Length: 274
Image (cartoon, rainbow, N blue to C red; front, side, top):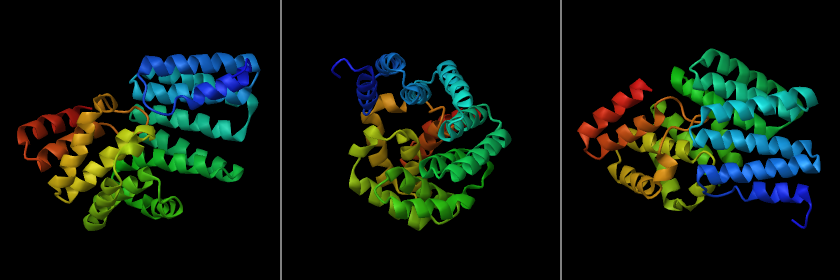
């Protein structure tokens, strides 16, 4: 980066795209955070803190998630930058969802959507919708998100996560044939894009639920094959983007579809415990 700390911070952040072990990602983020602080760039510091929180969700490090979120939120409340205030609401809503306080999570996500609309930030508005999906999945109300999710699919047809989300919604609301068609189309595209998908676990879980609803053991077998080839990505439930028990639940659905009923019972019992 030629001795420029701001350029170094940006380069380190870009290097996080892809698959790294948790400690390696944390080291890169900490170096980016240090370089951003040296450059005096508030935005780059906040970007590094947000990356740190996201990384903590995949590493199953609740304390790290809370610490990074608290630092981000404190800085956002000081700066009063609208996009950062929305981000801080997302952190707090995510914490509430993790703790099972879905009423508070919903309130905070809806508050963040109002602020995102005011600032005209479409990406943050979409992120809030993803958060609400976690809450509404728990409440059996995913159907209310069908229309906006279809709109995002139309606007960004290459975004696999939105299509997988639509497939899950359709499966939940009894529109199984269309849900399975979406999963078939996604699997035909291959799995290369999943390595850089921050929602990769949830994306695969949603595909599995739709395939299981359609009793498509062939699709489940292909999804399981990808999971077995990437065990690091499927070692636990993502704190930020999976509803409670989702990993064990979709693996249980896979096991049922593939005829491994004893394994399915154990996995669904684990999902209930979570």
